[in-house]
Length: 184
Image (cartoon, rainbow, N blue to C red; front, side, top):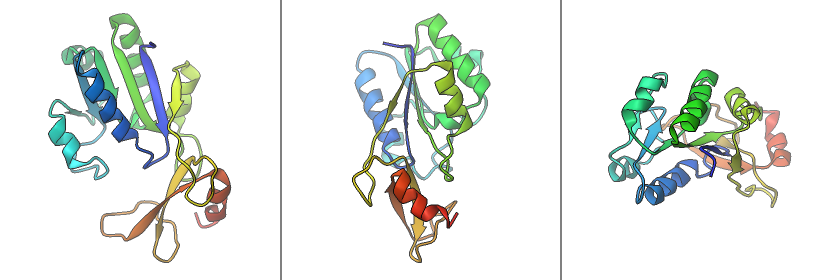
């Protein structure tokens, strides 16, 4: 198996759930840790039960360094929200994994709200890290979805919904996304 692998999909595609499944399976035989980009209070998408089930998680907002990676003393590192990492951090992670026989699994969102590939995800692909697409069906047709939109009760797109907003999450393919795109 490759030392570094990327799992990508749209928002609300189940990446964090998949990360937890990998953690649960791999931690039976290896020392693992999960690195979140934000703490629980800053990311309402991460369910409370994940923090309770996996108390060895690590919350990190700062830049990943060699010293930090060495301090983890793990065989597998699972990184949530890989799109929030920098290019230099990706280079460091790849080099660290290859030199230290550590497996690193990255989980991230491929496209932004405008349907453009997120620059660091593009970089990860350019570096040659193998990836697996997390696929979901479009909620409007049977095509493969690539992104999600948050739609309020008036059918307007919410770019940054808050907990106070009432909204529906639409998982959309390119064709159906383009129907909403004129509202962005």
